[in-house]
Amino acid sequence: MDLYDSELKVVAAAQSLAATLDKNVNHTVAAAAMDTYGRIHTGVNVHHFNGGPCAELVAIGNAVAAGAGPLVTIAAAGCGDRGLLSPCGRCRQVILDLYPDALVVVPGPEGSGSPEIAPISALLPYYYRHPDSAPQRLLRFHPRYYEATVSRQKTLTVRWQESHTPGPALAYFEHTEHGPIPIDITSVDTHRLSELTPPLLHLREGSSVDSYIANLREHYPTMPQDATVDIVTLRLSAPNI
Image (cartoon, rainbow, N blue to C red):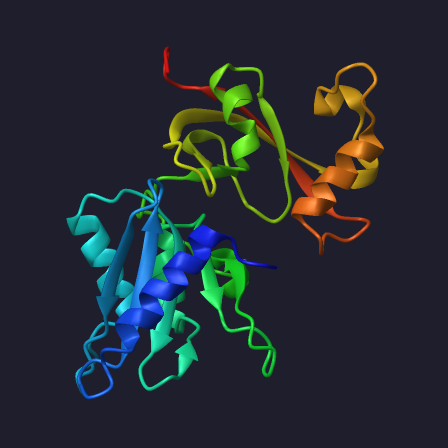
């Protein structure tokens, strides 16, 4: 999947910081993370025989110290032109527990030269989730849905492989200057694509399920024909925006 400009900025921040580490044997990896307001927070690893923290964990700590709130995109790069690096197992677990809706930039297939981006849950299949982490959940939207969301016209969305649950969350509008909006996810109901109907999708007269699924495939190009999806209903939790 191609990266957006905002995601490329995260990659550039990690690579730029990594380029300054070539002569420092104690710090060999840099990481960058973007919050819901587009601010980028960085950090470097602390290499030590007793198990110093990875760059991703330092970047997370710096983000928290800056009052960042939820993180939406994370990338790490190695010194010495090693390029982008995938997070280790420990970092994957930490990111999943603290920022379960984050996207992580990883190296593309060998020889491709193009990075890819994946939800943290995809990097840790059959994961264990720390029950006491209490992360702030995000529901990501394309910026074209901002007006419909704040005007309370948009109350439903369909998601594939995103593991949302009822409760408070933030509506986050990707690649835009709009800040996140507090919402409540009121229900999450699972259906196969073949089971979707106009009433389930709250479609207006003249709209078709086939068109809805075609638009869904633009967002999830690898979604299989018999996919199971979640119908997520939501409402604004704040009385006024």
